[in-house]
Length: 307
Image (tube, rainbow, N blue to C red; front, side):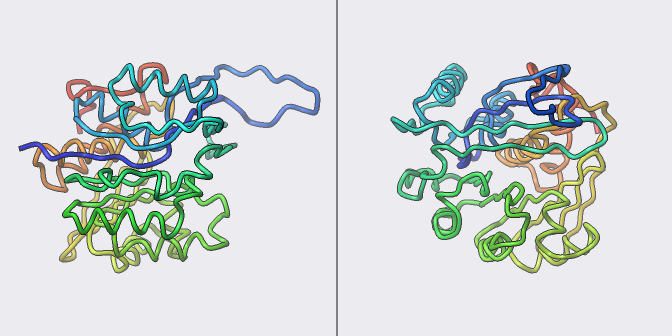
């Protein structure tokens, strides 16, 4: 029997500009190769990847009723994913602008908009009740930071769900309350999904292996450290350790790769696979996505790269 999946997190509009190697001079206008606009945010990316894989799920998030929000909502409804979207009158939709260039980490400009006020009371109780519950985009949801997220994760865990958690990068550069907040939440998390820089920042360790070992001690289940083009490193209950390399691919658009990995893991677990196989599928989904153009990036099962 297929397990149910719920995704809770930041639904927003993403604008991707590439290549951006420097900002224009004051009053200037720099011409670049492409600017793409898409329905996304971490939760939106996961949901769209799940949809392409044919994995039934529900998506919980909020947008405003501005032009951006109407565009995002219309697109999600076209895909059959908008029934649980919370549209807030008079509020602006969250928007992130991703600045990408070869050989450098992408950077973001973000306005949270309606997500500043999206709190625990705005998330339906039923969002926590599924077999697999992912909370993603933590740092893009200011209204849910701390106790709001803890309550959601605790309710999901107590209802029997396997809980998944992906934070994104701390805009405070892990120098404020971010580290304490995340470590305080991990006891409620069964599968934690940081990328390598996040894992290193959370632990103060200098290698992914050391960071993984430190984080495994903080929660009851799996920690999956995403290593980008190098694949992933995972540690779980009873001392289990897994390293999975990524297929070789020429990257076209890396934004949301980690979200696609999460979608692959969820989709495979929902079909009854074990964690090792699910992680392998997650790597295949993420690698396939980064090698496809932005306008056609989410693959079906038959389109996944081989291992």
